[in-house]
Length: 383
Ligand SMILES: CC(C)(COP(=O)([O-])OP(=O)([O-])OC[C@H]1O[C@@H](n2cnc3c(N)ncnc32)[C@H](O)[C@@H]1OP(=O)([O-])[O-])[C@@H](O)C(=O)NCCC(=O)NCCSC(=O)C[C@@](C)(O)CC(=O)[O-]
Ligand SMILES: NC(=O)C1=CN([C@@H]2O[C@H](COP(=O)(O)OP(=O)(O)OC[C@H]3O[C@@H](n4cnc5c(N)ncnc54)[C@H](O)[C@@H]3O)[C@@H](O)[C@H]2O)C=CC1
View (tube, rainbow, N blue to C red):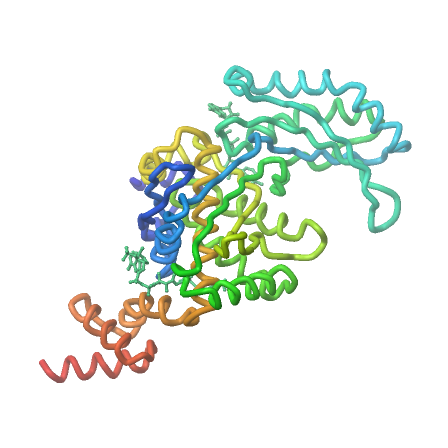
């Protein structure tokens, strides 16, 4: 991206930060071969996703589904004397409110999207009384949708307040986009994973992440290694997707794993993942960032829904890779093997020394800065 383009994208630009973009290979998603661009600074992430995508091919690759692209804006209403009466009045006027919302975005309506419904929630308020919150549900088509729904929310808020008999306060989308869910499933025979004991141990390890928030945080971080990398590469909003994922992981009141691991009747590992997925092909930086546009082209997707499904497939593959490594040889062998080049550079290796130092670190088995410094010293003494 040129400096001029960057300067138009955000404020007070002083530079740009380069993140490597790798391509995950071996992915078959809903029967289609897909190359997936991943932007990440972390070694072994691209390799791990490619590794499990390869293993999943034997039983047909990764299968995904998605719900409608429905985003929700929240409009908070204050000073309501009769919350239940207000709720009834608002629902009685739903058609008027939807028409007012749709008048804000003729382009979205023209392509088949637009405001679809309202929901009125009455929630207990911690300091006593209740909150009245209206959800405006909008089909955002191929957009991430935040700007689209926020514009509608601000436009309808005064009329909502009038109908409810109070005043509006917050008018903003929720990142807990639980009406815009994406799901992925894969199956791998035990032989490919290292045998039946490895599968049993993967199930036991994954179950700890269902029951224990300390483990769930790390398990889900592994999922987000894949998800955030594709979201970033395609110019989408990583914070929005991350907020959606983590809030969905805590939807029953306890933070849990986003994925589930089981064995099917033939003994194969079956892994599934479901989470909100607010990504778009129009709007935000997806169209303005040249590298993001090129990344989307690599995936050959035609809709935001399809992009979201691929993102989810990569998250699942990444998760299975990490849990397999943890249940088998441990994470350090594969991860540190690929991290060795970073350790070598950090220890001062020059471009011509990096590969030799990394290989020596892997052979030594101790991928550490002090060992790397010693190896560099030896190499230079030999010259
Ligand atoms: C790293 C591997 C894949 C090695 O796995 P391996 O079996 O030792 O390596 P391999 O050389 O036999 O390669 C197997 C396949 O991996 C891929 N692969 C392998 N190397 C490359 C490479 N250089 N470039 C591109 N692709 C690569 C490639 O698909 C290859 O198949 P091939 O193409 O050769 O037929 C494996 O050990 C692995 O999957 N480890 C998991 C690594 C991981 O999860 N890293 C994330 C960082 S750790 C973390 O942040 C999350 C965590 C772990 O805390 C989450 C959690 O706790 O749940
Ligand atoms: N909490 C959050 O997550 C927030 C995120 N944002 C930011 O909002 C941006 C995304 O907002 P958007 O509404 O997606 O962007 P946008 O407003 O740039 O684009 C969406 C608009 O594009 C038009 N459009 C044209 N073709 C379309 C198609 N095929 N499908 C759908 N719309 C089409 C529609 O008029 C639609 O309203 C991101 O940059 C995000 O970072 C902004 C505020 C809050």
